[in-house]
Length: 107
Length: 115
Image 1 (cartoon, rainbow over the protein chains, first blue to last red):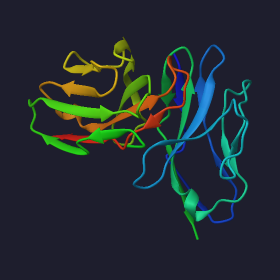
Image 2 (cartoon, rainbow over the protein chains, first blue to last red):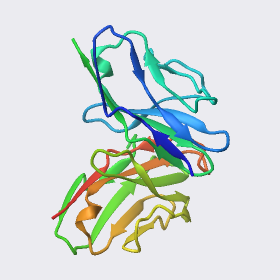
Image 3 (tube, helix red, strand yellow):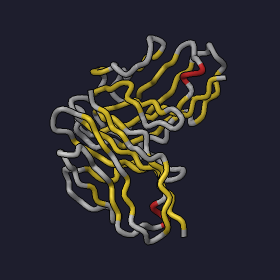
Image 4 (cartoon, rainbow over the protein chains, first blue to last red):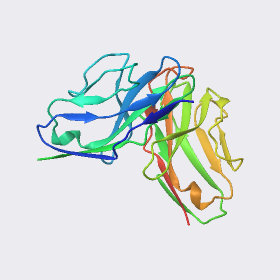
């Protein structure tokens, strides 16, 4: 079975502080990992995927197969980063999502 | 339209009623997915179509749930004899690629409340 765990329901930081949204997964093969984001009153959208090894809006995520983690990081949070973030895994089945972490960035 | 369109955006049903939720994917997108998102949870997979073929319906929670995509474009998710536990946001997503490999583009969802 494939499973995604996001241990934090809510992460609250001040503007300019570093952010790390945790994601751990369970999967026996080689997974594809993604981060999706949902801003207030907007639809769910792809933020980044581990295959691309890209930085989007200052966010990066590194797949750590040893620790089965795919944490999302940003060195300096901005107020516009406030949103719901979902980690997702695609293995032998379709996309499996975690329960999500709400990121609140205060001024 | 430019994105995935879902209707109705909000639906209130009395327990026992049948409901139908519509998804209009991005034009030309081959793959279509339905997800159920309960309050405080992440989206959970329901079913997947490639063109008109329903290739995976393993996530449908009961035989009260039925989905179709007869012409390989618009899809309808039907829930018969709704129960309170069916209350959730139903998300539709489409992808330009066949299989499960492409980027998913999500609609805004249909929020179903069963009283």
